[in-house]
Length: 561
Image 1 (cartoon, helix red, strand yellow):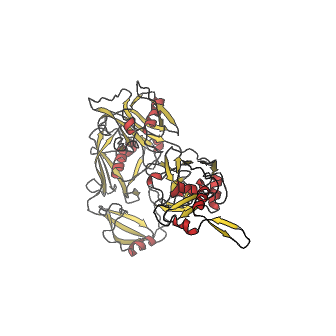
Image 2: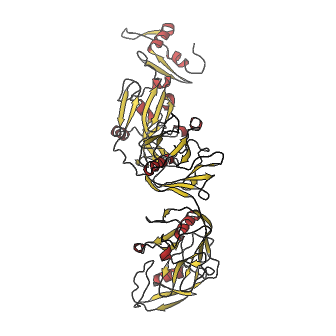
Image 3: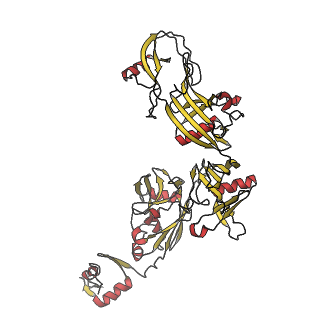
């Protein structure tokens, strides 16, 4: 088989300079290392063409020569075809949205089988909707094997259903002819149609064995979830549970409400694991003796509640916009053996982020720090940075915020009370999700490695972070002295717990082998026992204590006497 490809002289020169040899591939299949070449380059001839109009993926190329171009002759290779997929897929009744489109198509169609195979085989495909007004969808490309049509060749994908060629115009869409049955075989193969390509001479192949699930669709569609919560309770129980809308159970509750069917939960593992279990949906009931029950899949991955409780609980797992939640009923039910299913595409529009935020500080005083004050504090030098795998975090050291409320001095220079911090108290930092941890005052004291961050890589923090989408915005605890368990996000309150009462009078801190704070009353007591007097040149009498005595109080770890 020979086909002619028109290329401009510059392109031909590039090919020549690149040293393209007899095994050079006509298409870029570098993403498929197991592929053999689909065509080879051979001799070059010249012609005197006219201007060549631009061609689209589905338009026929025409030319009226006026200027020189190079025509490269291509000959098909005899190598084995590239096998993109050769396996079985299980299809459920319903619809799917084709890759890179907004079009909803019939799952039980050749394109439905191709979409399932693409997901399982991790390859891509491209369809065109140029005939969508007639109700048809056309397949252009699979992987790097793309539709090409000109005067001498037409490289295209052909579809066979159980060995019989399918008219793609009439069967890509749900018109009855495309309805697939159990054990059907769908075969897509690529080559030059004008040269009479067959599956045996094809350049690439997708072979799909179809299993059609007999599962009854209880629901198969999209639901819009908003932030908030709802309440649910097991049958005949006084226990009522509050569950976030953006969870699998929240998605189920939303469609049950709009579609008018019922579901039942069980709380027998709530006390020990923190999870709620799904027993029934409609007439499909949990039956322990028969081994019948409901399972949940998120984006085609089984949600194992038991192994990762409570994070993977139906009442806990956080959903994102675009997630697919599927519930399957049966014995160890999954996509291939379910009796009934509920499939939900999640639409979760992001709520607008507030324009400003505040945090509450509680200690000897109660204060509210707003976004403007926090950012001005950073501008004035109360700042620290920390770098991890996410990038550079920037914010304010925790000790500076603590200093605003650790005594009655409030705002101003030198507000952090180091003496109180040495005496010891807890600093409880709590996030907007209710998660809180304690920091020790002594470890926080003047420590720039415990940071309340407000930016990441120079921009405001994301709403969530990490695989589990932990809350992050507007403030997050970070730093080299912050442990994994102390990474509180959405910081909302900072509370000083067990704050010592300030001593009457003044204090002096002795720092040595250990630190010791001496109050005014204690110093005077020491002076009574070990005091000395000094009279200066103006006959003023100074009373106090030798310095060496104070040094001796902390120069080693032995008890002072």
